[in-house]
Length: 244
Length: 213
Image 1 (cartoon, rainbow over the protein chains, first blue to last red):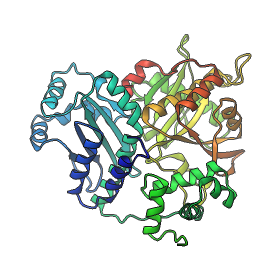
Image 2: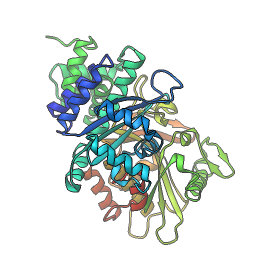
Image 3: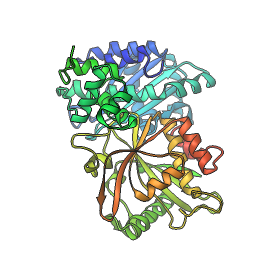
Image 4: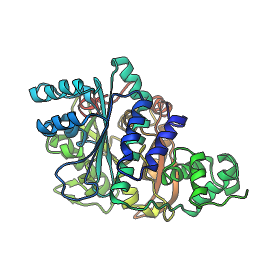
C-alpha cells in the first residue's frame, strides 16, 4: 500500500471528509486495519482552546488503558511524548531508554493493553504553534519492521499531516477554503480536459517539472491524493469548469 | 561525518552549535554581506527558535566543525513562505507533509574548495548526501531551498540539479532562487557517485538518538 494505491487514497479521502469529532474513531480504526497496525494515536497540542493542560487525544485503544495511563501519570515519563515533540524527525520507539522502572512498566503494560511491540511517532508542526504527534504500533520482528518503515514512511508522514489538519479544521470549525493561483487553475483545467503533464507543459509553455510542481501544489491545496482526485474536487468545488 | 542536533538541544551541544553559528556569521555576514543579525560573533535568526534540525559536518579526525545546514518542515514556519514569498508567484506556497526546507547552507571559508581531482569539496558532498539520507528516513519526497547563483553551480556538480520554482530575484547583491530537490534513493546515489561518497555520512549515535533509524 504505497501512495497512489486505492486504499491509501480512500484513507486520505476519508480523513479529509471528517467534519465531526465522532468520525475520527471510525477513520482511525479503518486506517489501523489497512496497515495491519495494533494501535494508532493522535495527540494534538495547542489546537482549539488555549491554555489546556492536556493534549487533544484520539486513539484506537481502550478507555481502560487511557484511564490507567492517566491514573499512573504516565504522560510525565512517556518517552513517546517527550522525545516525539523534541524533534521534527519521526521517532522509533525501539531506541528509547527503558532503564527507568516507570518507563519499563509503561511499555510492559501497554503490551497488555494491546499495543504492538514496535512503535513509530511522527511529529507534525503547524503554522501557529499547533503541533501534534501521530503514533502507531504494530506487531513485527526486526526485519518486518524495517521493511514496514521503508515502505510506508511517506504514507505515515502524509497521514499524520492530514489528521492534524482535519483535527484543526474540526476543532476550530474553520471553513475549508481553497485558493488556486491562475497558473495552478490552468494546469488543473487542462488535466480535467484529459491532457497529460507533458501536453499541459507544451500548451502553457512550461517545463514538465514545472507542471509537475504546480500539480503537487494543487494536490496539496485541495487535500487530494493524486491528480485524478484533485480534478474531481476541482469540479466539485467549481474551481474549474472543463468542457463536457 | 554529519551530526544531527535538534534546535532545542543547543545548550547540550553548545560546542558544536556555537561553532556552527560562528561559521554562519563568517559566511553570511562577512562574506556574502547578507542583512543578518550577529551577536557575539554568532549568527542566529528567529527560525533558529523554531526548533529546526541541524545537520553539522564534523571532521572525523580533528573534531572541527566544517559546515552545516538546517531543516524545517514546510507545514510550519519557514523562510520561503515567511521571508522570501517574493520568489514565488502571488498566492503560491510550498506546503507539504513530505517537503522540508533547507536553509543556511554554509561551511568554514576554505572548506568549499574542492580537494585535488574533485569537482566539489568533501564538506559540500557530505551535507548534500546527508539531506538525502535524512529525507529518506523521514519519508520526504522533496526538499525546498532558497539559494544564490553560486549554489546553482554547486548543485549541478553534485549531481543534484534543482528544479527552480517561481522567479529568481535580485536580493541584496546576489541573484536569489527557490528550488526543489528530489529525495530518492536514485538522487542519493547520484550525489554519492558525484562526490565520491561510498556509504552513510550520518554519525550513527546522533542518528540513533534522534530518529532511531
